[in-house]
Length: 430
Image (cartoon, rainbow, N blue to C red; front, side, top):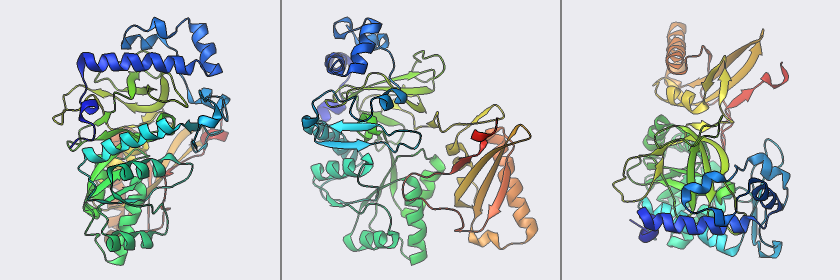
């Protein structure tokens, strides 16, 4: 199904023409921001110098650290009285990024969410429970307004009070759920403990953190849903900039609203489709806060295959963020890789924690792993067998030695928002 078939399937010269027009407009809009005005003057590039979409490579990159220098409103391209909403990033590694929205921005964003939800088969006949944080986090209100645009019945449950969430799913006949994968897994655990299998659910929309194909299988089995991946970040409106269609083979990036590049994160060189690197995004319809070649830090690639659904270019599901990547004894390790291995082992539960430390000048990684109830009370030699099995499979995939600690079921932290599974203690040890 399509929400806006003309734009969703736009290709070839028509797409190039639209993107070029909107890119030029975005550059002129960005010139209202002192940072960009200075940057464009120094680089000798302006909108008139962009004659085709590939000329975007003439523009310098924008980094998250640049946005922080403008805190709070230094990256607004319109007078503050035209900004009708403010969201921020989490600010876990410094000052948060403040994102402003005009009325048109909010309409654009809800349009993209409506496309996403329609693309996976949701209609005004569905009841949608939005189990993510509302407030400054963009995930809640973005999906809320998109669902209402379609005409769905929206349950703005937010996170927490999980037993009540499960009661609402059953009592209200909820058919679609939006949550982080980690909270959805926790919700499934609690539903199982309550003796309910959430019979009305059919669709799960999950994002805000990288999650593996094995996690998808686990969520689908436990919640009895078809699970779809969502991608976005506050700087590009919020979630829903890219989304899986029913083929579930990559995420469609809405090419009428964003220009996407993949670069080598070390050299900045633009890579060809099929080559994995850092995702760079230029939104081309944002009024309040335009961005030019924003380095997301996310690792993916552009897929070359034509999608049977008829929509445009796709990116691969994200491996992880470059700033989430752990370098252990010279080997790059993503938490999503660890999750994928653990989810493939039948004896392992759904929760794990990773601890990284430097011991005698060497990096050491310890992983605490919950074991399923039926295996935890077994004989010592059985637990040792499971421990060796986990170590061997992780070593085969990661090429890194790990220490595995098996822990009791339900003993590790549960997360209502984004999971925080890694504790890296090396920062103070040089």
